[in-house]
Length: 142
Image (cartoon, one colour):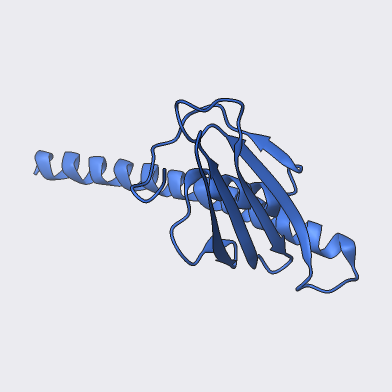
């Protein structure tokens, strides 16, 4: 009987902890949405489908190339739709990719740098974001 009471108390504490963590995450998501809506409402005019948010994430894609010559540019409208243009620059060649963004998410999986550019554009964090780390190389790039 005493063991059952202890197990029930532990389960209750675990449930309350999980609920608190979920509430904190939900509040963060709600704040993010409020910020996006505030930016959208503050304009009051204009075409919701026109490109209005642009952000560039510059980074070193390859270990042998420094100077942050690779970049991802997100061009997003008020609805969260648009494109991400990525250029991976190497010593002997450059590869360029375009991926569609719908509702703030890529239709194809986005690289961390592409996701950062989309996030920065949606939040209006400024035109240029610089990353200092060297990302893991996808198999289809240089």
